[in-house]
Each structure stands twice: as structure tokens, then as C-alpha cells.
Amino acid sequence: MATAKNATPVKGIKVAALQEGGRYRAGRHWSKEPATVPVSDLSGEQLAQLRGDALLVVIDVDIEADATA
Image (cartoon, rainbow, N blue to C red):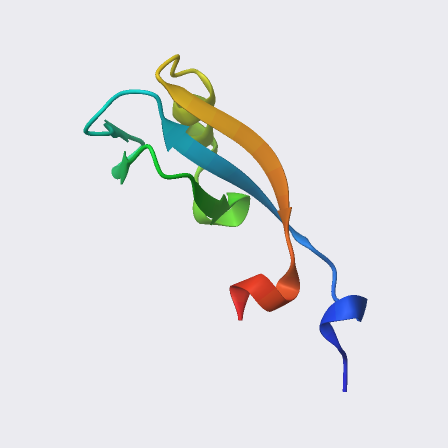
């Protein structure tokens, strides 16, 4: 049985809006509270929209396997 320590992290992004009330982009609402999303859940176009939006903070992260369970 594999443990979480042996699992490969999933590539993701952490997204937070800079403005009160959040921001709609890439078919989702993003609030000021950071949200972590696996990159595999987004199309290339959605990822480009998020990265290109000056009113969103987008940070690349590794999502640990036990965090997605």
C-alpha cells in the first residue's frame, strides 16, 4: 500500500482576487481567499486567462496527494 509520502505531488495553481467581491475569470468566481486548483482541471485557455489577469494573483504550487483525498 502506497503512503502519501511516496505519492507524486500534482501540479496546481493558487488563485486569489485582488479586489473586494472577487473576480469572475475562466468560468469561475475567484475570491480574495486563495483557492488551490489542479492544473489538470483547467484548459490551456483558462490557464492563460488566469495568468494574464492583473486583478488576480496566480502562484504555481505542488498539491500533495493527501490534500486531494
